[in-house]
Image (cartoon, rainbow, N blue to C red):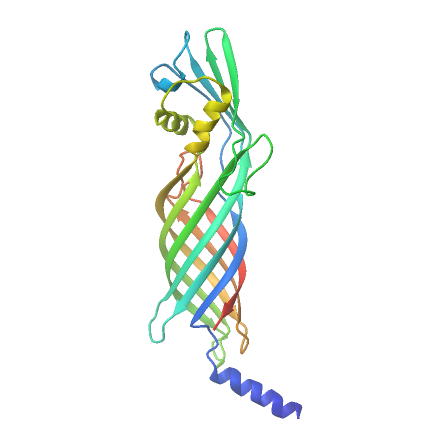
Length: 260
């Protein structure tokens, strides 16, 4: 009886496509986006009009280092028979935080402006007395199955692929000289208190841009069962909305999907 059952399962596995024509999965990993520590002063013609009051005004930026970010996401993939390429769409959210503040000096007065604004994505990147960094990376990729293994077997559950594509990025500004000038350059009125200045930063926090990526990954499709395990790495380029954040980060994700 066991031999008959084993033979039936083996025959079904051979006849059924090992790799899914369509799948959707969830994943988690790390993104190497980082932010360096900085101590910068904005004064003279660089100081936004918002802060020009009193004698010899200036704005001092303090920022601690942030190393890499955590990442969660979803992706879907599609194989079309007889086409040598596959299609993939994915969206990943990365988050971290760093300590920062602004010191506004004018005449004999000095005010501290803490930048502990709420995260644009509630619950992610939030920490008391810290500035959130959140990014949402949405990718559209073409990928090519480089290898299907084992090579001599009619069942090839393991696939290694490479690819490339376009990326849309939404991310928070970094507390940096250029970003502060742009944020307060869009603000009307003039400085009156720390909460008001912090509100300007909060309103101008989320920005977007376009970039691209290259990828390499592996997928293991469990024979017969509609389950696929995968791991992939993506190298992004031009995906920073702020010069102070990594423009060419590497993201590594592992996940599981439902595959048919």
